[in-house]
Amino acid sequence: MKKGLWYAIIAYIAWGLLPVYWRSFESLLAGEILAHRVIWSFVFMGLLLFVGRGKMTQLRNMFTNRKTLLVVAASSILISSNWLIFIWAVNNGHVIETSIGYYITPLFNVMLAVLFLREKPNFSQWIAVALAGAGVLVATIDYGRFPWVSLSLAASFGVYSLVKKKVSYEASIGLAGETAFVFPIAVAYIVYLHFTHHESAWSLPTVSFVLLLLSGAVTALPLLWFAKAAARLPLSMLGFIQYIGPSITLLLSIFVFKEKFSPVLFISFSLIWAALIVYALASMRVARTNAATAAASAAEAG
Image (cartoon, rainbow, N blue to C red; front, side, top):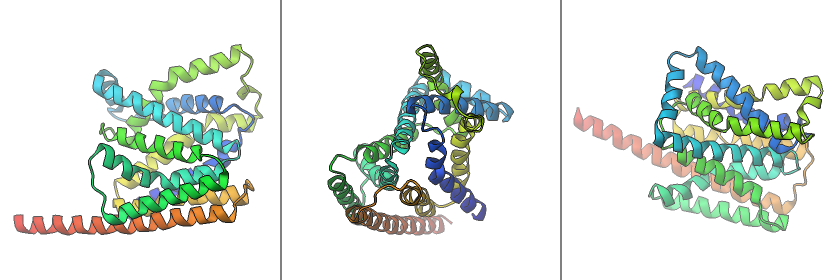
C-alpha cells in the first residue's frame, strides 16, 4: 500500500503541474500541440509494448475485435477532445476553469452512473452533487458566461471513464490503442499545417522542441503510475489523493499565471470543496459498509 500511495501522489503531482509544461508551447496552435502529443504518445507506448512480453499481441487483439474497436474509437475521440480543451484553456488564460473541471469530474461521474449504470447514490452523495452544481452556477455568474471549459473537461473525462468500463485492458494497452486510432489523424493534421505554412513546431527553440518530443512520456507515465496505484490502494483513498492535481493547478493559476481569483469565485470553490468533502465521507462510509458485508459473508461461508 505504501508503494501504491507514492505512485498515486507522483501521478497527481505530475498532472497538476501539466499547465506549466503546456505553456512552454503557447506559440503553437492547440491542435498542433495535440497532434504532437498523440504522435509521440503513440511512439512512446509502441516502444514500451515492444519490450513487454505478449503486449503487442494484446494490442493486435484489440483491433481485431469489432466491439472492442468501437469502444477504443470512442474512448480515443473522448480523451483527445479532453486533451485539446485542456491545452487550449491553459494557453489562453483559463487555468482556473480547468481546475474547476477536474474538481467536479468525480461528481459528474455520479450523474453518469445514475443515467447509464442505474446506480443509486445515497442522500449524502446527492447533497454533494447539489453543492457542486451550486458552485458551478456561482462560477457562471462570476464569469458572466457559461463555464464551458470546466464542464467540457468534466463531461469528456467522465464519459471517457464510463466508456473505459466496457473494456478490461490494462492502462498501457488501452493508451496504446487509443493513440494508435487517432495517430493517422494527427499525422494528417501535421502534414496539412506543413503544406499550408502554418506549422510552428520546427521553429521552436531546441530545448522547447525536445520537450515537445517528450510529450509522449509526459502523457503516458502519469497514467501508468496511476494504474499501479489503483492496483494497490482502496478506491476511497484514491478519491482523496486525486484532488492533489486540481489543487496544484489552482495554485499555479493564481500565483504563477496571475489569473483573477475574485471573492465570488472563492465562494464557488468553497461550495465545490464542501461537495468533495461530503462526497468523500459518503464514499468512505459506503466502502466500510461493503467491506463489513463482505467480511460477514466470508465468515458465514467459512
